[in-house]
Length: 170
Image 1: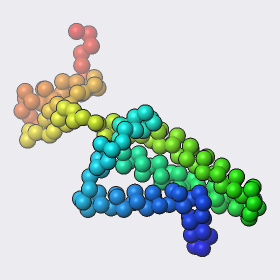
Image 2 (image 1 turned 90 degrees about the vertical axis):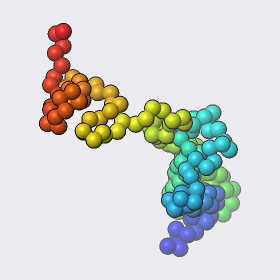
Image 3 (image 1 turned 120 degrees about the horizontal axis):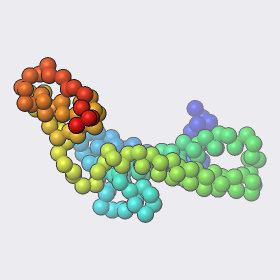
Image 4 (image 1 turned 135 degrees about the horizontal axis):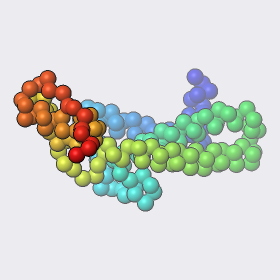
């Protein structure tokens, strides 16, 4: 435990420890309803950094968390190899800072691309909802086996109506 605390409070990991703790407290406030996940969206435009499309808090939390883990892992790996003092240690730590920041930014960009569809900037059309008859309204069905199934179900009024495959010859 002592080794972990020393590594977490040493340079450069400490530069990511404090923002990671701030992010953790922020998400606790979001969980209890004291703040919203889009609280900081008006403050920063992350689109030019390739991190747009999700709330700023999500991008910041991902980046700091990933950088913290990368920095901590590099500190554990380099401590036995690099001398305990001098220019070699200082330059290795600066290299860890640059590498952890860059690697976490790249991974965060990749994760943000995957999260964009789940966080639309503007409200779109209403989501499909299940009506009292069991008909899914507003859904676009692409499967040939289900195409028109909701319409047939709505017309027949039966809950046990099953969609039939489309007749592609027509």
